[in-house]
Image (cartoon, rainbow, N blue to C red; front, side, top):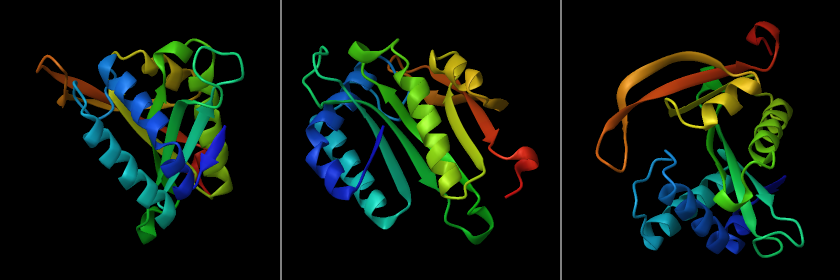
Length: 181
């Protein structure tokens, strides 16, 4: 796993656009609806690059190994750590956009990304992590398997490609006992 700086996001933007498009096209609930226009995906990654430069976002990427299906060095997975900035919230962060390319799934990359996010959070003094996902998505078992606990679900929270409003599940993980720093 590698953390990209703002320049790294710019350098790998093509692969990041392809990764996000693959996720949206395969039905992942990552904040966009298909068909995802390249310009919309490009604008999104530009905002991520800006947040990385500002220090409010850590972008971790998984890259394909030599000899794999995708081109060598291509980004095949991401996870973001969105750092809370308010004075009373600097102990927490949101885990977002945990995405693995459809051609690279079932190889442990999602788990590796989650563990890398937690490691980075610890090093940054973030002890409470939160995330949300559409209820029933394949990512839910991953999150619970690495220690996230369901806080609750909100009905009719996220729109799907077919126009239905699906519930979203909200999870948390305390990285220290009792959530203390």
